[in-house]
Image (cartoon, rainbow over all chains, first blue to last red; front, side, top):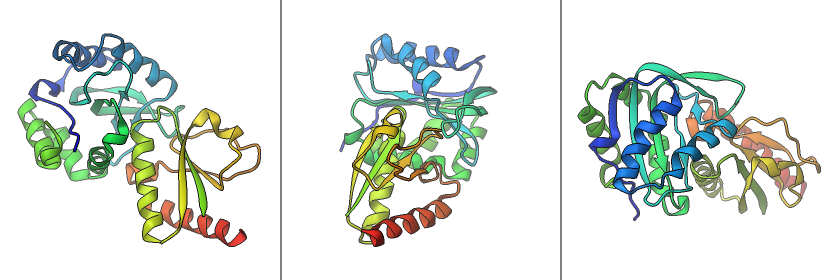
Length: 155
Length: 98
């Protein structure tokens, strides 16, 4: 089974950023360094967000920016923000959501990752998990939550 | 045989999950089906489907009048049971008219 790569570097609690572009660059810089993505990935994310935004009106609003282009290895990153930033709503792009939890993904081939994408989408539906993520004080707390929920699906 | 289209913007995450959920729902109800992925921008021109499920609000309608449903509930879980009920009602209506 294919796994999604992540590591403590990609778990960021109480990050201070002013907007989604700033957030994307923080994560992309790390992902380029690790060789998960090519430099065009960040621009692709920003473009995608303009046309098809990824804010979600879940029990606690979140955003799930993701693209598959310029991605070498499928990975994900979880950031909680000290101050919320705005994302437009995927279900209704005219609407703005104030978001403090962002799951960011690079997905090379979704057909190979149906199982893990399903599993992650179930996290989006669970208020108690989103609350725990929101309350996490340290990067390690986020990692622990993800490890507990996704078990052997992350590497 | 119900012919479904799942249409979304990026075509990665949401489509994958929504398609998998629909398969699961229809399998459970023993309803034979095919599911084809499309982009939201292609909705108007689709001519070989019975029902279109989209993952983002769109003002686009299908030229042939194929019904379009917003299926975000299957992804966010908010309003999910209402969606499934309405979805199955529509699917059975289409089946009955064939």
